[in-house]
Image 1 (cartoon, rainbow, N blue to C red):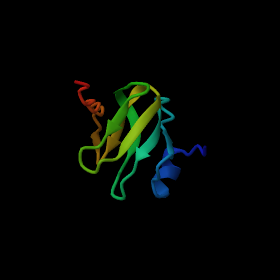
Image 2 (cartoon, one colour; image 1 turned 180 degrees about the vertical axis):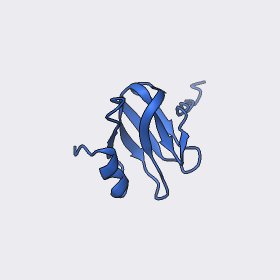
Image 3 (cartoon, rainbow, N blue to C red; image 1 turned 90 degrees about the vertical axis):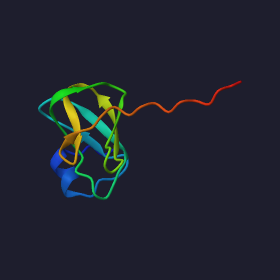
Image 4 (cartoon, one colour; image 1 turned 135 degrees about the vertical axis):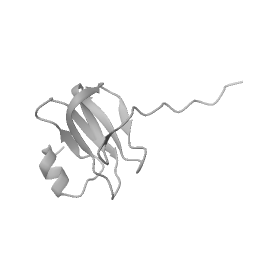
Amino acid sequence: MLKQTQEEVEMDTLKVGAKLQDPESGVEAIVIRASTETGLRLRPGGQVLLGKRYVCQSCGAEVLVTKGGDGEATCHGGAMPVAEPKPLPSSD
C-alpha cells in the first residue's frame, strides 16, 4: 500500500484505501469511504483510538484509525465523531 503524506493526499484526489498520517502526533488512518467534497485531514489535538472508525456527519467520509494517539480526524474543519456500530437483527 502506498504511504502518502498529508500534503500529497490533499493535492491528489482522496481515494478509498489512501493512508493518512499526521507526523506531529503520529496518528495514522486509512480512508474507508471518500467523498468528492471532503476536506479530510488528521491534525494534532484530541484523542483518536486504534481500530475505531470516524465518520463525517456532512459528507459521509469515513476513516479507520490504524495508529492511535493524540490527534483528531477532521473533515470540513470540524472533528469527526466515532461511528456508531450498526445494531444486529434479533435472532428470535
